[in-house]
Length: 201
Image (tube, rainbow, N blue to C red; front, top):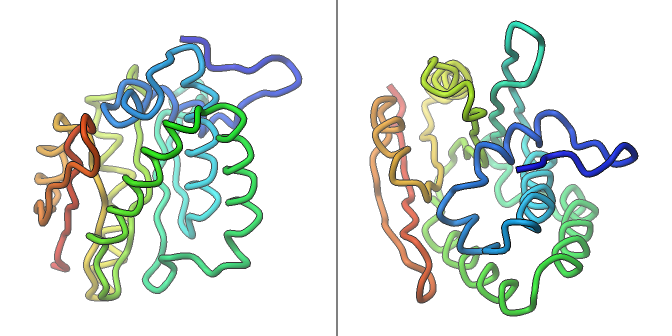
């Protein structure tokens, strides 16, 4: 799975790590079944989510390579202010229109419309993305990245919310106090997507 786009178009190391983390995610495979194009398609979506995150944390390996990344939005920042998100959104749409067939774009729109319907209305921290490079998984890095967000949410006495489309990740999130509040299958053939909430402690 090549992750670099050529010498003139190097991927941000954080995006590179996130691509490796989400490459085999059931939702990514559903959206982008073409493995040769999935890297570029994932890159556009992950870059968009990272740009809209108000807190971004990453961890490094001993040789200073990016091992994991979390992007989260503070209470009151979801949905993001229009002008803050406009440039990133336009870039995402243009990239995906170039890389993604119309049929796949329609599926993506349906799925994200369902995301909005299950998104909490009360103030909350929203974890837009959390990924650890497959080579670094199982070492506790996910918990290290997650902990500062949870601590801040506890300090502010607000919930933390995220969506998960990988059943293998559910036990990880439950370990940190998250509970599934909703399971959805937005369109036919789509893998289940879970909305999870963690109450302040």
